[in-house]
Image (cartoon, rainbow over all chains, first blue to last red; front, side):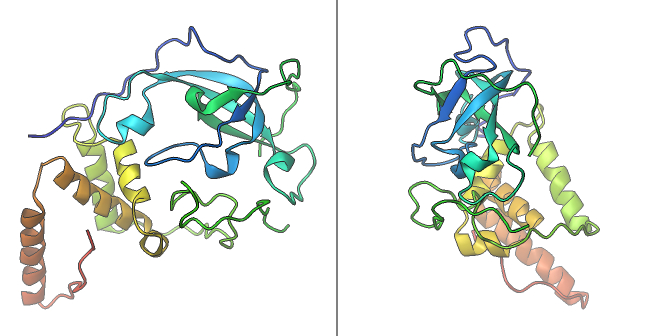
Length: 123
Length: 130
């Protein structure tokens, strides 16, 4: 018997998203067993929500033939390159954007009023 | 410009959850950006993944394929080529999903190998590890 992987359709609306563009967030630094889309070099790092992409089935569960529910909100988070690398030699304004799921993000304590600048450079 | 260096370089092995593919920031040298023409087997591998994940079959997801690839040992992951990673993962997922058995796949591979040898064509003697 083939255990069918579930169909992955369009994302559902993002009502109830925990974060909004401009919110400062920290990527959880927890270890992982199994498939996960949050890169190691971003764990524990602080960035700013740049966009809310929508809700998507959770790849951490889809990878094991599970339905991937509940669907998780996916954000585009913007980081300063100098916050990620110890000796970053590029221009000071360089940024990096990564897609991170909501269950990997925590509100950055004390950073509630900090907002992202409107200008941005892609990494 | 030099490559950016992570504040604390951590080996993948035993690094508390850093998976084999998750090498961003590690000092692994420059990225080879050269392109090559795809061999027929590489195109077939690509097609197979697309067919196996379509809504009619849904045998696997890209996520499951990635999970399988991320489970390779470090030395295998670094050594084997892109589509070889794919075809090996597809094969293992076909067994995991009970579409084919390991014995069926190995018997068929032996059959194909014998056919090529008989025709005087060079056939790989080394099997792809499970």
